[in-house]
Image (cartoon, rainbow, N blue to C red; front, side, top):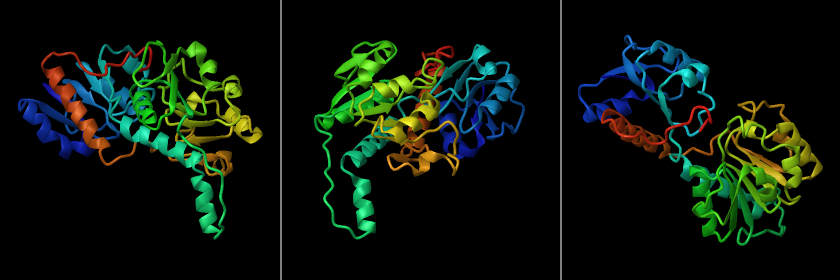
Length: 316
């Protein structure tokens, strides 16, 4: 069997793959889609740091492709027509990034609650002041999208004795979430939250989900934390809400345009914390993603059900 693997992580993968099956023929694929040999016979493709355009071209060149895996949780950037229309099975790595992302959200939450930025500014200015800090204890965390990441965040928030509420497409009881709502009850959930974390995938249903009406439903004292995709939030509406004080502030790790242009007003708003789409960052992320892929590869070779199969129509 021929499988295609990313050339730039081949040192981490080749021996591990051949341990599973020494008869596998490996094709090395660069980030730009160049291969070291003919890839027409490839039945599996590991997409790693390849653009949606490159993925679409590779799929078109692999008529026997049956399975593609991505190390990312989100798949919106690779769901090109060539992928959607192809009968291949697509799997993602949802859950692999849950720990660092949950820690990032809680870090932002505590930075806000404990006035950490004020302390740092006061230290820089040699100013001895006593800003009134808040507690996470007893505060309500609203999670928009309670999948792998949302549940990991909820578990950790429960450890701080926070009240956790959330939304999901099918509002069934969810671990570590005290109250779950459907997306049709989003505004009801938002109205209760002191902190709102966006952890849902970007799909046609969630594109622009957080707009003027959703922001109006939030408390004036609430903070919005987005680690998912920029386009889930209508940025102009958020900008206006932040400038008008409709909500207290926002911690933004993702944006419509990345890198965030230097002239973008979010950089300079005093009630915004900007981070460069690195909430997933951890020295353990790469190893976890590789282990997850290898588990799925064994399942694929043995004809067993794959983990994290994506519904290409729903987008997650």
